[in-house]
Length: 237
Length: 254
Image 1 (cartoon, chains in turn blue, red):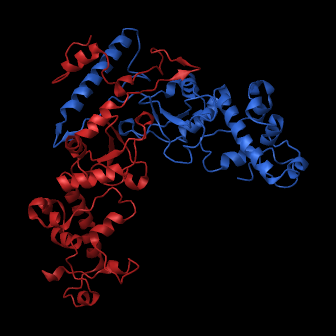
Image 2 (tube, rainbow over the protein chains, first blue to last red; image 1 turned 90 degrees about the horizontal axis):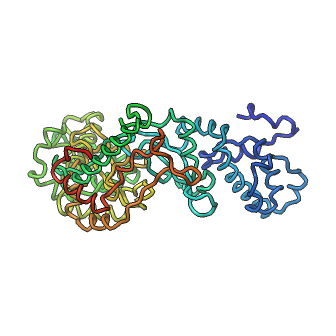
Image 3 (spheres, helix red, strand yellow; image 1 turned 135 degrees about the vertical axis):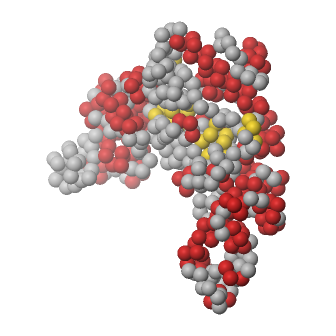
């Protein structure tokens, strides 16, 4: 692990990069690493200045360019504050970064490794999930997970993930992701569950399932009239 | 009948061998067995309830006696046992007892007291809550997809979205589904109609992909294809259509 840490060779004593430390923390599994170049480009940070106090210092702290003497002169509570601000700012930059070409590529790798978990729905067959926020403003709601197979939202399984702010991923991420990589859109499962008693379906639930199936067939018919191919990605299994 | 009385080897596995441990409570208290209800011994003692289980579980008698704590309690008695049974058979009986308890459990939870016990666990969220965001933490019910031993692991049914989920904890994901049975959610819903009423009153919410606030076109590969899964009839037209689905699928799709 220590051997392949680039960018720290210039410092004499052993220092780990803040970003790597942050990503290595338990609970940070959903985040990808952002290029320091992206963070230091002021254009990418437009409108983020007011989100944290001492903005420039926090940016320097994230990319490890803050002077040692400044850090040493800080009180314990100030350091803690700085760390929290850095995490928040990293999250907000993260939401922007993951919808760039490079960020999407990094998230694709994480998606392939199922870093965001798998869909708990039985008929989705362990489909890997994608993180999504329901708000782009921090402090409103935590991150949710989007399943590209059943197109629904799920809560993260682990409590250490359910405290991550949804704004750190943004509302547009899964949409952008699936637009950028249409080949990973799965075929949607059509199987549904109807409760049974000794093999006999419950009438009300069975009726609803029939009606839902009817809605599905209607959708398929109307889309096929518009030349949508249901035997390919995005079609039905 | 006393030949099979095996030595209580599990006494040295349970640390406080001084106090006598009943099998059923200790089985249900084991780590990962949170989904099981305690079956009263009267239920297990009634042969009618256990009809045909002897055909499915090997070492039926021994297993049942182990569950009901009917075997020799003291260690020295076991030492006097005529054919000192090897340890292997002990673990075989233990395994059979677990299977037998599970199969009896699937029957017990469909009885009135069983449903009551289950409802208490349901209220305590012992089976977890629905992972679906729009279900707002609805309690789940365990459910099997097969009534035969060793076919399908246990799944969880959400009465709100009517869907099946995999247990969140890995320790629950491997429990055999037939220990709860395929009929459990159905019987539970019929027995507690207030649950259905409560679910029916909940607002139906769904999610659709948005990019910078704009919806994705339906013709796109990532366009909405699964809205029907969470849909409920809402307009008058849809209710009419729903009525047509009472006994079969309408043949013509308009």
